[in-house]
Image 1 (cartoon, rainbow, N blue to C red):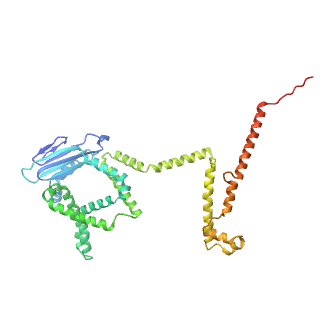
Image 2: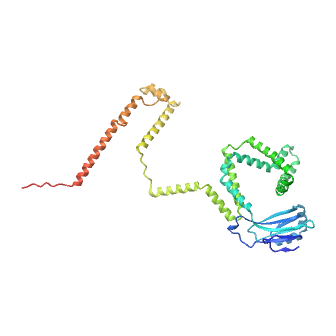
Image 3: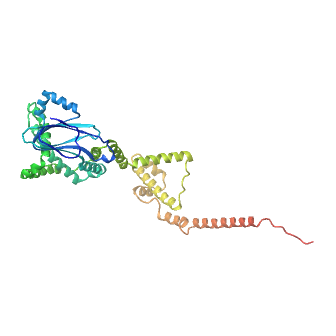
Length: 400
């Protein structure tokens, strides 16, 4: 075995066990936001791959026989694997071990990963549309069916645990069953293409059965209706969106900056309202209180009608309440019948009173005519005074 100093760009194929190290010579910049340093190992037979951080760790693995024995038992054997590397790490090393003769494997280094952009876009979608999605029935049923399909093994283990007697030693097996279920799901996703090609009938039956069961469970409980539950789901979707935004950007400062921009953009109304409130307070403190705006004649009339109706309704409610002394009020008023009709909902004015008010204060009424005549006399008086002031004093001459 020997050590390759670096892996750069081109594909390398080998037929014997090797050590490989990738040395990162470029510092990350803004163009690498969707760049994922990834080493892909493909082989025609099963191999065993070990990833470490430096060549010293590789040598320590070679010298530790106990660790080699345990890792050979626990480490997964596979035909292909992807090894992700941190953009900020200086060196990443791996060890490829052949388990069968006539094994040929190839190693290639890739940089751009379009999946990162999809993760970032999904994060933006969840963050900005979380409020709408939390109230959508389509999203509720779609998410419920998807979760039911992915978590069917965990649900099966939960049902089995409910059927088991209490204080049973089988619980120790079930605790390990959760980890086994997650491991099984990982294997299914790794070999999804082979499963779809070889066992598509069983896969289709599983999807239909579990999809129908998941839909039945979602239909049984129905979409969320409680406002607090909807808010919790909305906040959970927004937090998940922020996490996906962070995971979709490889440059951590840029990821944090984009998260901050997203939060400020979604909640921009609150800072603007706060800034406007501070500005108005500063203006009022510097200029003093502004004078109140006078009402127009139409606003005065409308406000008078609204306040009058409000006050009359409050008076009726008080007269109907147990605190009101009806006998005392009846003994002090001149028309008890009219008062009773008013409390029952009748108008507080009679027809004659309304007619008299229209004659006095309506269009063409006495009050309006007096106001117009007073304004005309005041204008004539002011015009005469202005004319005399413009002409100035006069001098009369007499002949001797």
